[in-house]
Amino acid sequence: MSAATKQYRSRAVAALACLVVALSAAPAAAQQLVYRVDKATAVMHGRYLVVDVKGATKTGGWEHPRLVILRHTDAGNLELKLVATPPGNAAAVVQSVVPVNVSLKTRAPSRPVAAVKVVSQTNSVTTKIVAQNGRQNMALD
Image 1 (cartoon, helix red, strand yellow):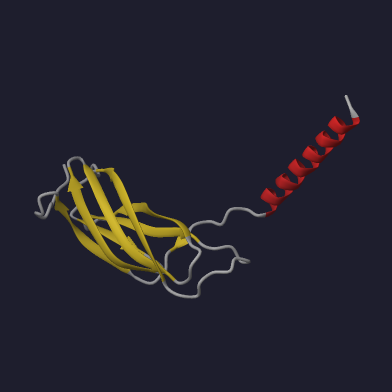
Image 2 (cartoon, rainbow, N blue to C red):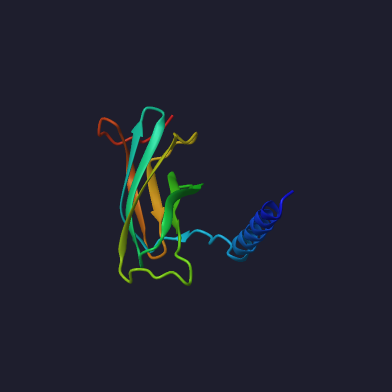
C-alpha cells in the first residue's frame, strides 16, 4: 500500500469519525403541537377518509407537519393532533406566524364516526365528515 493510499484512508476514517460524533451530538427534535389550527375539512372518498388542515406555527423553521390520530371519542369523533418538528435552538428563523398545510388519507375507521377534531397548542377545530358528493356522513361503515 502506498503512502498516498494510507494517508487517504486515515483522512476518510477521521472524517467518518467526525460525522458520527456530529450526528450523535444532535439528536432529532421530537415533534410538538403546532401553534394553531385555522381550518379543517374531512371528506369520505370511497373507503378512505381524507382530512385537510390549515394552521400556523409561531415562527419559521418548523418541518414535517403531520396529523397524528389520537383516539376515537365516546361522542363519535375522531381526534387528531397537528404536530411538526420545531427548529433547532441555534437556527435563525423568521419571527412571524407561518402557515402550514397538511393532509391525511387513511382507511375509514371501523367504528362509526361523524366528525373529526384537530387539536393544536392553542385551540382545536371540529368538522363534520362529508361524503364525496357533499352530503353529511353519519356513519363510515
